[in-house]
Image 1 (cartoon, rainbow, N blue to C red):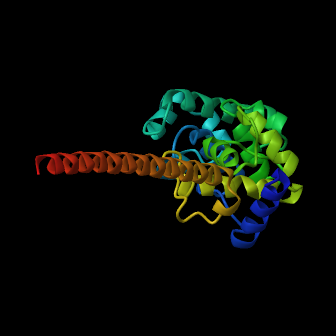
Image 2: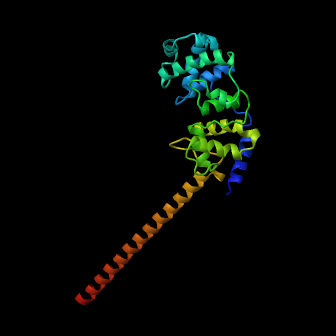
Length: 252
């Protein structure tokens, strides 16, 4: 199947069956989403959603966060991954929002990446979710699923995956496609044990096609070996039977 066909089937399926996907992080405004996404790096959305209610209550604005110490912020996020670094990033991010961006979350990937704790993935999430820009954030789920389905070829880095997806997905679907890939990877196309038996994409998935072809070849090879062993065993038994028959004739 050509790559263009895979992209067409991918967009057709999700645009019909999941037209309005949203992030599973809980937030009420751009500032809260920015904080939540910074915290979510190498951590689950479920864990972040457990932490952020108290954090947002204590630090409802960039001004409040900028006035805090990293130790104080740490006390609210100690259960997430890398809490020390993230606490420092959040305080620095709050200060930059106040000093450089008038307390508002800035638009544009370049401006977002100036903020402490904001890498390209986080910037793309904010750009696509808040500002509805055609930005593709590539996390581990997006990276894995895009490669498995066959939407990308030889894409060995998140940036390479991002470039291929943005190049091939229609512009109006790029922002939502990020959520399609994440949710599919989170609940069906799991890292260790993908649920191919319930996946609706197997008919155009390169991973499924390759694995099933390999499995079929392995089964065929196993059947061939088994047949050869049975034939050899039968031949040996026939040889023994003939030898016994000859002896019984001589003895008679």
